[in-house]
Amino acid sequence: MVAPKSEEHRPWGYFCVLADEPDHKVKRIVVFPKQRLSLQRHLRRREHWYIVQGSAVVTIDELQVHLERGQAVDIPQGAWHRIMNSGEENVIFIEVQGGDYFGEDDIERAEDDYGRV
Image (cartoon, rainbow, N blue to C red; front, side, top):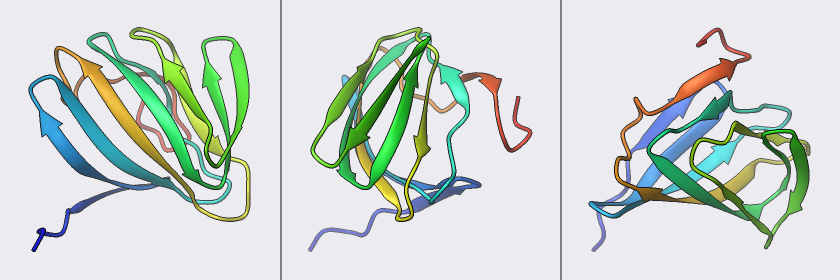
């Protein structure tokens, strides 16, 4: 039997870590309707986002990309990025991190709807 993963709740939704290895980390992330993550960047990791459910707008530096279920995007290391749930149902996506460090303290925020800058 697989042990249930613990959820970490945020104002915009929640996530759980599916894998945490020395060379990668995998999260399942849920973003509530009309919510968005902070505009942020990571200096020590890159990310790959695969949309499992919902409709999202992803910002990568100056680019905005609309993604639906089954679509994916790569976030380069050091790029400013965020995801916004543009629909009426939860957005669920899988985040695969690569790099040399995966701690939550490798987040630099430029903008945040919840006062965390």
